Image: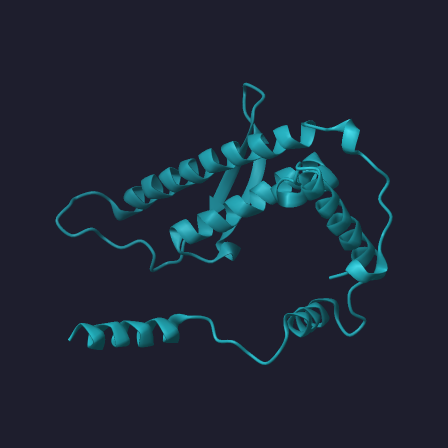
Length: 187
């Protein structure tokens, strides 16, 4: 009896696992790049930049000081902020279960001089429904829920951005070296 359930669980798990294809990873990457960049393929500057990033990543791993997430040392503070904002955008869309096209994020400075993310959310018409057994206005309940979700996503944004900006400021001059693009390390 137990083997029957184990076999059934294995069968279900196999159907849920990703399907392997005959196409190699390199061919998949090439196909996606051609879809994005057109038939010209990946621009030369992007390949060289990727090669520099890969070389920097390998060298930093060798000395025990790996690159932080987001490549913020290579790209700078602005790129770290933009990356965190993009991650907040995706997290908010997942949290609300709506399309990312319906969420617009921007950064605004408050009266204390702090910069905070602000979300403009366009909810679908069928997203707000009356709650049975309560007299609460569904639109007010939806506004309260949206505000709570934005607060949670903003809190995660602040934690993430402070960590990444701190890493951007942490420079070790003893491991700095000149980087030259390597032709065989492109994406």
